Structure formats: C-alpha cells, structure tokens
Image (cartoon, rainbow, N blue to C red; front, side, top):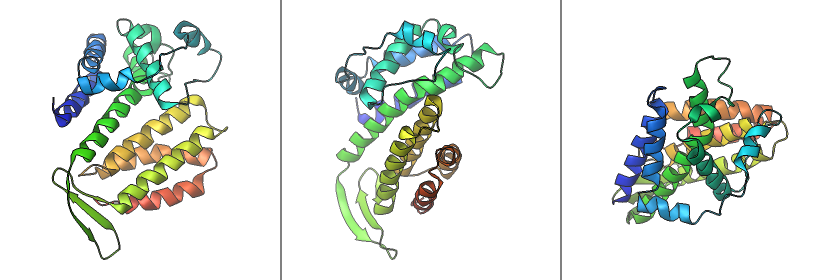
Length: 246
C-alpha cells in the first residue's frame, strides 16, 4: 500500500479511537491495533522494536504510589505502550481508572486521558516515521535561497521544506531532551510535553502547517518549560517556530 494511504488510514483509525464514546471505544481500540498489525510498513517497524520486559501488572500497581514511569528509549517505550494497549484493549476501564481526568467522574473521560497519555504517542511515532519515509521518497526538483536566506528545497510531492523549518525541528528535539531530564516535571508531565512537541514537529515538516495546532501544542510545552526552568531556551525555540513557513 502507498505510504500516503497507510499514513492517512493511521490518522483515521486514531481519530476514530480518540473520539469514540464509552460504548464504542473498545471496538475502536481493537480496530486501531488491528490496523497496526495489518499494515506492512508498520508491522516492519514493530518487528524491529525490542521485546517488552516490563511487568505490566506490577507497573499498573505502582501507579497509585509513584509517578508515571516509562522507558527513556523511544523504541522500548513504544514496545511497552503497545503491550499495555494489547493487554487492555477489551477492558479499557481497568487501565483508564488509573489516569486522572481532572476530577471528572465520567468513565469515558478517564479512558480518554489514558488514550491521550499512552496511545497518542504510539500514533505520533508511526505517523512521524511514515512522514519521514514520504519525504525521502519525494524527489528534489529545485533548490533556491529566499531574500531572508531561507533555503527552499522543492519536491514533487511536498512543495517545500525550508532550512528554517529544519532548524525548528532540531531545536524542538533539544528542548524535548532537556524537559525529559528535568527533575521539576513529573513523568506524566514529561510525556505530555513530548507528545505536544511531536505534534509541533509533525506540523513544522508538513507541506501546510496548521498554525492553530502549533499554537495550542506550544502553549502546553511553554508552560512545561517554565516549570522545568528552561524558559529562556523555550523562548529561542518559540522564535524559530514563529518563523516557520506557513
């Protein structure tokens, strides 16, 4: 299947899961997993992940007493998140009730919090990897330099990706690393920051970045950076993001 079609279907499956109500959320979770295990491009990536070695039952028990703890290595983290989703795909209430939904008493709100914290990163990982594959397949047809010295690389499929956008992605990667090392942020806050940074990165390398999505995600990241004592660095990153080609 064409990379673009796989990526589009991935987006649809996650959107269905993310918007599902209580009566359909487990069906949507199974559909999402079934797609991951049926799309060859994704199954090849999954096959390269290290085997999950974390005892999920013990990890869930510890959620009551400790901060959310996940593997630092990205592929190990994906392997674990997939294993958790696989284990609870038919009983999302059991895992969802461990996630704080801002004081809500609605079961679906707790399940959605779990999806946002533990499943969205899976979607974002594969979406980003597929996007990179798309970019690599897009032949470069022309290179030029604009008046503000931004290098424009024009491809048949993607329009243009400027050096400014690339610099923004690199700066976001550095900010992500800094926030992951912070002792001022909880495990859940770090994961939320990484999720939002990945969202921004996906928009920055998109042929048509959505400024509203970037602004919403950056609001969360900026707040986390301030808490972590990285406000000055975040300001520099913000300047790069503001100069992205829209």
